Structures are given as structure tokens and as C-alpha cells.
Image (cartoon, rainbow, N blue to C red; front, top):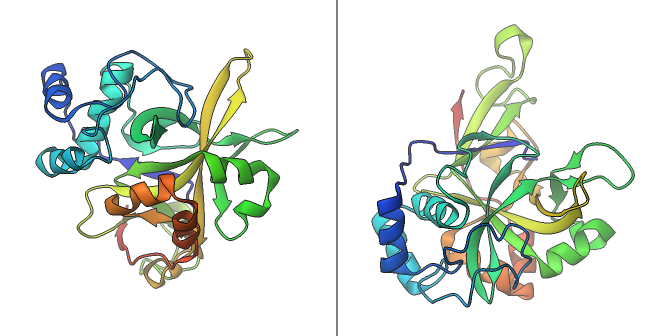
Length: 259
């Protein structure tokens, strides 16, 4: 499963850099304020430009600035500087997602967790193997997929295979940060839904899809997020057959850092 993840906080984005990003690489969302609740193909972000996230110019731009910095820059353009929480991301937090708008991927904020039908609490994960069979997940998975950028995700060693004996201070399970070697951003496959908040306003939320743990993770947990490379984002977001292939494949090997 994935119950916490991490966004590197050592990324400074100032407004001058944001302006340079916008001029140099384009911005699929535009500087139009908070589109917040726009669904796939919606929002108030204008027509987009091939320099937005997912375009060739965007990929070149990532190589210069670093992927997470570019994503935070897109969010800052849209919502204002400081809109992105960094460090440990928890259920119910608003966090960046990449989703299609006007046919191009764009960065926006959404709340982590679908509300439970007729009950308290949030649903934060969905099993990749059965999500298409579940009424809550079928339509979002078919029509509103997203990618959740992170610097890594956390897992607790409840099986004792992480090398720390499974128990940390005060008998609690050891906590690990899992990363993919050589990847600046760990993209997790997700899906978006729209729900009414306590005031009746529509808000967007996301769920992270999980799959069977790869061998490097299986020593501490039997599940892990479905992970995507940057090159697979377009396939995940826009192609149903590609989506189904990505959900079926085995997870990659990851490095574990004891916290």
C-alpha cells in the first residue's frame, strides 16, 4: 500500500524563475489563478502549448531544471508561490497531480483520498488488479487518470525483512523511504474523482493504485504503488490499452532508506 509519501523540500522556486519557466517552456495551465476543480479536459487553463508538461520542449526543460522543480513551478504559476506542501505527504493533504487538460498533461492540486460511501474516513489506495471491477473506481480509472509525483514513498517494515528486525523505537515498525535509483521523480499511478466538501462545493481528490510488491519491497510489505517513468506518463494518461498494460506489469526494484 502507500500511506505516506515524500516531496523533496530542498527546491526553491522564486517568481523570477517561474516567469522564466513560463516564457522558455510554455505553461499548459496559464497564469490564471486556481482552476482547482477542473476535470480532465476542463479547468480554466486555456488551450495549452506543446511546451507544457509532456511535450518535447517540456522534457528538455526537465533536463535543465529537474522534474520536481518544474512541477512545483507549474503549481506556483497556477495557485501562487508556496501552494505545494513539501516533506511528508499524508492522506487528506492537497498535493500535486499531473492530469490531462485540453489533451495535454498539466500540474494541479488535488486532495489525497476519496471519501467513503456512507462512512467516515478516506480511501487512499485502490488495488490495480480489481479497480476496474469496483463501482467507485471504474469511471475514474477509465476517464480521469493522473500521475502523482513524489520524491519517494514511505513504508513500515511489518514483516521483519528490512534488515532492522522490523521493530524500531518503542517497539514500532521500522520506517523506510523507498526510491528508484536514478529517478529524480517517482511517479505513482492514480485516478481523480470529484466530491462535495462539507460546504457543498465540488473538490477534486485522488487515489493511488497499488500492485504486488517487487522483490526489493517484499521483505517489508506485500504491496507497493504502481510506478511510472517519465516516458510512460503520456501512455498512462491518454491510452486505455497502455493503462491496462502498465497495471499488469511487475513493479521495479527500489532502494530502501531506513528513517
